[in-house]
Length: 147
Image (cartoon, rainbow, N blue to C red; front, side):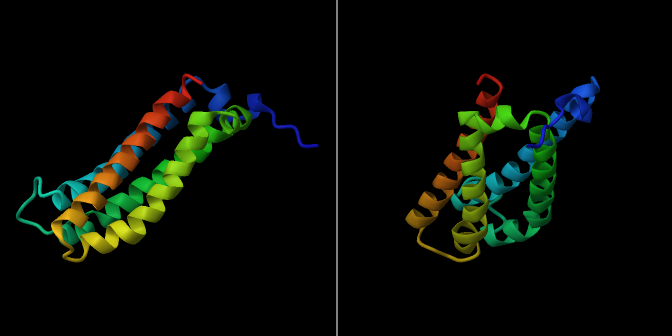
């Protein structure tokens, strides 16, 4: 049987490592969700009217991928600080399910709609669902601390 020593983890043995990692996690989550939200708002016809949603997808793609890369890396580090706590946390499980769904949704249907010219009602549904999905992920993240 493997025994995981929580005290040996640098995030648990250094006063500043966990909060600093958490800061990177939150900032990178804001970056990737924010860039997706800019595209969603454009699909809804709000803001940045001088660019199409397809142009915004291309313009924000690198930032979105950078945000996802940092949020996943920092999230794995945070998870390593107490894996059993997180595995048994319902908000964490919800967050992971929403993250997986969000990534799949963003890089399939959402991207396809943003790069085409679908009817406005369809764009509204796609963008609205995307915003709701990412908002639910953020709220589930907040509740991890209270579980």
